[in-house]
Image (cartoon, rainbow, N blue to C red; front, side):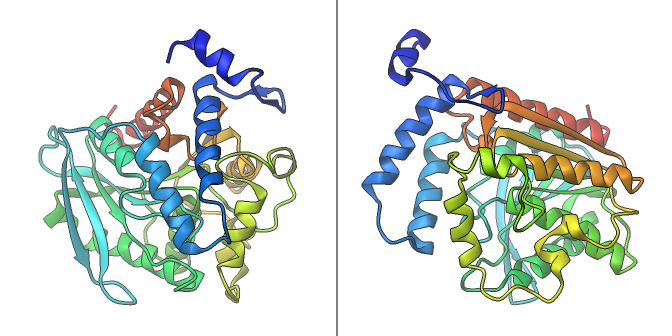
Length: 329
């Protein structure tokens, strides 16, 4: 839609904390809010999952067609785990690898959620990407998706040769809840005396439960992640695990000795400040950590490349930064 028409439709754009929401995102937000209102009812995991599927289907950019995609299952702590393998056409010999953990608050999402991003990471980084379909709440406790993520990373490391992956260039990454799980893969491997991934890629990660940061207040009514949505996800988790570090990686007793990190946050996101705080804490503990905020974009912007040029550019920047970390830029 031409920008002059969009401006008339949207009217005055949201400006919060000195940031102005991208025009195309604002229009998409209006559309999705209307669609959500049509389906309004008692919140449930089933309804939330359908909403996420619609969001990802409507908003995501087209996947990169030259990347080969294969689904399979691997052994997991609670039974077979579905995974999706992404093989870039340009990969020759043993390529770098990325174990990817999708977003969804631990309640929604699956292999299709971050599918478009995974194809772009594979293509731009020349990397094999392995996306993991970990177990979700409320059917399974938080501990299930933590151990699934840790086990999946280890399985990829153990089977790197057969997958065409260089085990010395194996990274872990994820978006939102998946970003939190990626931090825990690193923390749990350090605790077990295992080698660190070559990098941890954390995209608008949630790393502190019951956060009271400024962005949690100013962005409480943001879309697609609001205070009410966060409360719903929390209510679905059941009893928290005994290890508080699994709920809030930022509060871990020590953050020393962890993989180099890339933390990308979004301006219109309640989780914005805690992502930045985690990068600061990593640096204070002696780790390398780069962080950047995409100021005009909201949480889950990697699912909006089909409706926003700025979201597409931000996703490309993310993939290019990962390529630099893997040495394939």
